[in-house]
Length: 455
Ligand SMILES: Nc1ncnc2c1ncn2[C@@H]1O[C@H](COP(=O)(O)OP(=O)(O)OP(=O)(O)O)[C@@H](O)[C@H]1O
Image (cartoon, rainbow, N blue to C red; front, side, top):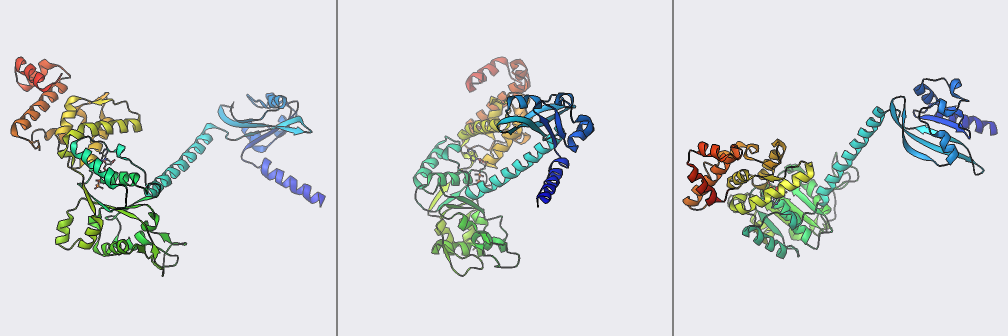
C-alpha cells in the first residue's frame, strides 16, 4: 500500500510539474537550485544536470528566489524580465517547522505574446459579459430619468410636467410621435418615476416579432410544448415584466391576430403559456408607443378599436424637433457632451454658423438624425469646434429651401443670417473676404452683423 502511494505520488509529481506547460523551479535555503521542470529548462535552453546544484542567480536572470528564502515573504504576479521577455512570476517560500527551507517559483506567461493572447482572451470574455449585461439591461431595463431628456422649449416643459403627473399609478399610457422623437426615452422615464421602478422594464418591439412567434415571445411556453421547444421552457415578455412595466413599442405595426391576444390578457389580467393548462395571473403596466395614425388604421380595420381604448387611457404627444427649434441648440450640446464623454474626443463646441444650420434644418429623422449628424461631425472635425464643413450637405442645401413656420420676413432674415455666418466661417473669420463672397458693401455687412448679433 505504501509503495503504491509513493508510486502514485511520483506519477502526480511527474504529470503536474514535469510535463506542465508552466515553468517551475525549486531552490533550497541557500538559493541553490534543487529542481527545475522540463518547460523551464527548455525555455532557458539548459540541461537539467547543468542547472541543479547551481546558485539560482547563475541560472535565471533577474531572479529573486534567493531573496524570498531570506525574507520568507511570498511574491505573487511579479513582472520579471528573462531572455528578452516579460514574464509573470510567483515565488513562494517553503517552510518546515516554522523555518524557511527553500522556495518554489512558477512562471505563468513565458513571453508577452502569450500574455497578450491571454489578455485578448480576457477581453473576449469581458466583451461577452458586456453583451449579456446589455441583454439583461434590455430585459430588465436601463433606467433613464427625465434628466436624460434634454429640452427646455415650452412644449417639452409641458410634456415633462404631464409625465410627472401620470407616472405614479397604473394607468396605461400611449406615446405618440414621429420616429426618433424620444418615445422610448419617455417610456423609461415614466417607469423610473413610477412605484414599479424596482421591477423590470421590458420592451417588446411589436413590429419585429414574426407573426408565428408572437405567442411564444409574449407568453412563453412550457417544456415539451412543441417540437424544438427549449428544455425548461421559456418565459414570455409578460412573465419577465411581471410587477413592472411592459413597453409595447411600434404597437401600430402589430398584426391583428396578436392584437386580439394582447387585448385578452389586458382584460383578464392573466396569461396562458403555450402548453400550459393553467392560466397565470400577471400584473404589468402597459406603456405603448407608435408613430402610426391609429385612427386611420382603425377606420380601415387594421387596428382594433377595443385595444385602442384599452391602451389609450392617457395619450401623450411628443412634438417633432422642427416644431421646437429652441430645443435644437440645447439637445445638440447635450449630445456633444455625451459623445465627448464616451469617445474622449476633445470637441468642445459647435460654432455659430454650424449651429445656425442645425437650427434651420427640418430634421425628418428627429433627435436620432441629430445624434447621427453630431456624432459624425465629431469624428470628421480636426478642430475643437464643429463647423459647417463638418456637417452633411443636406443641411446646407436646406438653407435655400427653409421649411420654417413664421412670416416671410422672419424666414428671409433667418436665411440672411445663416448665409452671413456661413460666409464668415468659410473665410475663417476674414470679414473682407466674406463681404466679397456675399457681394455686399462693408457698411452693409457691419450693419447686418450688428442686427443679427454676429461677432
Ligand atoms: N430629448 C432628448 N434628449 C436627448 N436625447 C434624446 C431625446 N429624445 C430622444 N433622444 C435620443 O434620440 C434617440 C431616439 O430616441 P427614441 O429611440 O426614444 O425615439 P423613438 O421615438 O422611440 O423612435 P422610434 O419611433 O423610431 O422607435 C435615442 O438615442 C435617444 O436617446
